[in-house]
Length: 200
Image (cartoon, rainbow, N blue to C red; front, top):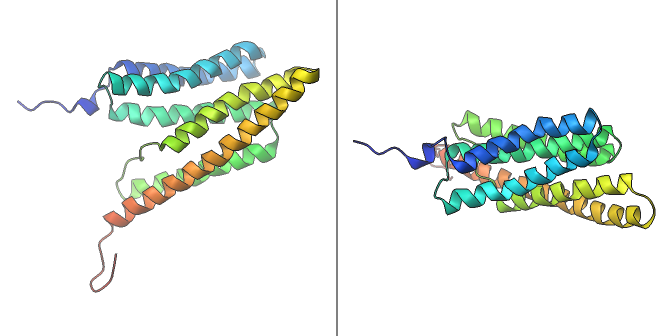
C-alpha cells in the first residue's frame, strides 16, 4: 500500500490558520470602507500580519508543510496588501503614486506566473525577502493610518515612521519580485530543450 504524500494534506492546523487569514480580507474591507470602523479594521490587519508568521512556523514545527499551504500563504499576503492599499488610497491615506508602484509589481509577477503556467510550472515558493517586505508593509499601513487620524506631534512622528517603513517595504517588495523573475527564468530555461549545436 502506497503511503500518501504528506505535502498533499489539506486538513492541517497551518492551513486552517491561512484560511482564516483569507476570511480577514473581506472583513477588513467592510470595516474600513463600510462603517469606517478603522480601529477594528486595523486590528484585523494586525491579526492577519501576525498569523502570517504563525502559520509558517507551525507548518515547519508540526511537520505539516503542504502544497496547499504554500499556495494559500502568498495569496493571502497579496490580498492583504492589495486590499489595504486600495482601501487606503480610496480614503486618501496614501497617494496614487505609491499605489501604482505597488500594483505595477503585482502586474509584472502576474505575467510571470502565467508564463510559468504555460510551461507547466506551479507558482514558485515565496522568497524570504518577499515575506520581509510584506511584514514591513503590513506594519507600515497602520502607522500611516495613525498619522492620518492623529494631530500634532503624534501625527508628525507617525508620518515619518510610517512612510520610512512604507518606502522600505516597497523597495524590498520590488527586490523580491526581481528575485522571483530570475528564479522563474532559470526554471523556464531548464525546461526548454537545448538546440543542436547550440548552448543552453
